Image (cartoon, rainbow, N blue to C red; front, side):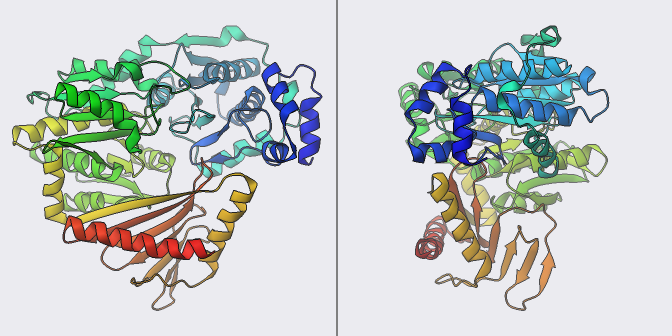
Length: 561
């Protein structure tokens, strides 16, 4: 069907939800094309899109269709109905309704369902899948996206988001469903079991096991904000129970789907810290912690010489990993077969730290599901999982879950701060000491927002240009080009080609001398082309200048396309 035929199908459905019907009636032709030409696709974060009417929007009918397809996929696994599915949700508009619809569709298929009573963090959903021995899981969230969005993450039996080859099977099942409006969700509601505090307590107890030095003095103050999201459920309680002095930003500790108390719900953006830093200044706090709405990402601001400095996800990962490896070596608990995992758009600094301590390092694609997949390999005897992270403010200390876990990150970051406090250092000092040992690594990212169908065409045009042309980056020499979509790495000096051992993905990475690199990658969850940069230099100023020069040179090429 073309977009008008799909639009008419929806417009003529007599039982369509009233708010969606009203939206359809206001659509002009452009809006119809945007809402119906394509269907929402699974990206690095699953199904995610703008709330509203249409096949390219998040609504209860799209959720029902996705769940029916997911359920049919899960039915191919042994004892799937009895093992069941765990479901959680965040604070967004329609999140609770979407989670209930998902539960009812699965129950109608005959699945036992473990449905959280209220909003809970993504990592706890992953934990619940493993705790109950489920065959899968669903998390209703749009992570750090603006309030207009919602989303749908799906998990396998290990609590890991589905990798592409398995997601493709789910998509194939979804595509077999032609009638959005005939999906039955009326049966077997007695199979839906409401869960809550009992799982919270077990999860929190497991998280606390990551503590390495429980007796460190904790004589400093912290401020915490969940940015209206799921971290409000127990992040503060976890910190306080471990002896930390933490004050929440009260105005942001509410389940507000409009995010009215924050300028942005993304802790990668400095504006997310405005209120937290204001409160920290008033009470003399040393650190500000911010988690995103589904509490899988952590951002921090650190007081140093009277000013709060925001750290990137790469910097936080370097700090935490360095502390973990240093401490475990001192405690003689560092495994000889230890592995650290990262992604091909993340900093090289944690890789250098890991190698110093004898850890093996594996690099995956963007998307924590690939690190979760590696954790499964460790469980099967390949080695010992030690740490995993990606640049977008997400890490995992213990593989009790198989997704980013900001609750673990908060606890380990706080312990890292407590340790350095005993040495007369704050976290800024600690990071500086790491730079002095390994070199000044600096990363950057440019988000080129290109919305709608025209935006998608533009993104494809840019990627095709870089894929099919030899480029020259002003002031820099390119040594190697990795085209992950083609699965080929090309040495540009010898023209030697070698295969890339990664799943096919629309990602191109260029390697330059002196640990310098850049990557072009369309976002899997937002209408953006992301350009990542990484450099190494002998000083902070030199690194800042180098990353700016590289960014300017790459964007000069992009802007001409």
